[in-house]
Amino acid sequence: KRVVVFISGSGSNMVSLADACAAPDFPAEIVAVISDKPAAGGLAKAQSRGISAHVFERKAYAGKAEHEAAILAALDEIKPDIICLAGYMRLISGEFIRPYAGRIINIHPSLLPLFPGLHTHERAIEAGMKIAGCSVHFVTEGMDEGPILAQAAVPVSTGDTVETLAARVLTVEHKLYPLALKLLAEGNVKMEDGKAVGGIAS
Ligand code: GRF
Image (cartoon, rainbow, N blue to C red):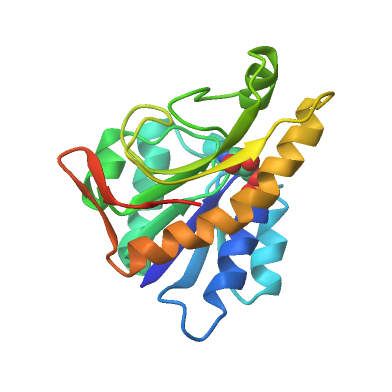
C-alpha cells in the first residue's frame, strides 16, 4: 500500500513508520512526506531516507481551502492508499477527508476519548491519571474524535513532568503506529458505520 505521512515537527513517528516499512514483508511503503512547516525537522529525516518531501506552507495560500486544495492536487498525482498524520498540527476539513475516508489515520498521545487536542500530557498529569497512553484513530471532522483502531497504555510515574511523560509515551507511539498501519494496510481493521471493526490493544 502507498502511504503518505503528514508532519509539522520533528517527525519521529514518521521515522518509526519508515523504519517499519523498510522491512521486506511490511505491507506498506512511504511514498511521500508532506509538511505544512518548512522548518519541520522531519523533512531532512525523510530526505535522508530517500523519501520525497513536500512543503505546503500555510501562509503561502489565501486560506485553508486553498491550502487544502493544493495538497489534494499533489495527492492526486501521488495516489496514496493511506494517509498517516504524524504530529500534523492542522485540523483537516471534511471536504479533504471525504475522498480518503477510512484511509486517513492519526496518532494522539492520550487514551482517547480522554484529553483530545493540545496540552494532553499536562491535563493527564493535572487530572492525577496513573495510566496515560496513546491512540491511533481514523480521522473524521472532529479533532481527535474518529474511531480508535489501536491503543496502548503507559504508566504515569510519581513526579512525572510533561517532558518525562511525553518521552515515555512517545517511545510507545513508535511501536503502536507501525502496528496500526500494518493492520490497516492488510485490511485487518476497517471503518464501518463510524466504528473501527478490528483493531488492537497493545
Ligand atoms: C507525537 O506525540 C504525536 O502523537 C503528537 O505530536 C507528537 C509528534 O511527534 N500528535 P513527532 O513529530 O512524530 O516526533
